[in-house]
Length: 121
Image 1 (tube, rainbow, N blue to C red):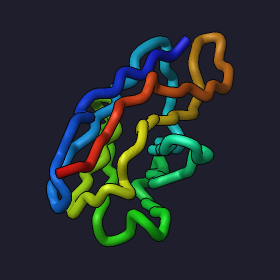
Image 2 (cartoon, rainbow, N blue to C red):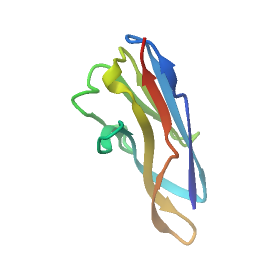
Image 3 (cartoon, rainbow, N blue to C red):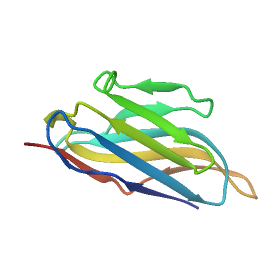
Image 4 (spheres, rainbow, N blue to C red):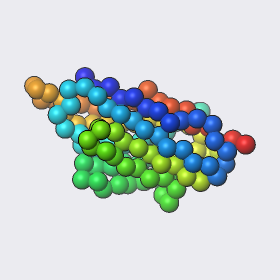
C-alpha cells in the first residue's frame, strides 16, 4: 500500500505563487509517472502536469509557461511550482503516482488526499 501526503496549498493573490508537494511512502519498489490533477467546483478533474521516470515533463495548455513539475526520487516526492496564478487556477489539487510495490511486486496507482488552492484578492 502506498500513501501520498500533499502539502503547500492555500490562499494566494492573483499573480502570486505557490509550491505544492506530494510525498509517497510505503512498500515502493519503483515509481513511474507522477502527476498533478485539479478539480474546480462543478468541473471535471483535469490533468495539469506529468513527469515521467526519466524526467520528461508534459503540461496542460493552461499550465504551460506558468507551472513547473519536478520530482525528487530520493525523497519519493513530486512538486508543482505554480507562478502567475489567476482565479481560474482555484481548485483542489491532487497528486497521482503509479509504479510497483513489493515484494511481492505488483502495480499500484495512488491518489493524494487533495490540497485546496484558492486564488483571490
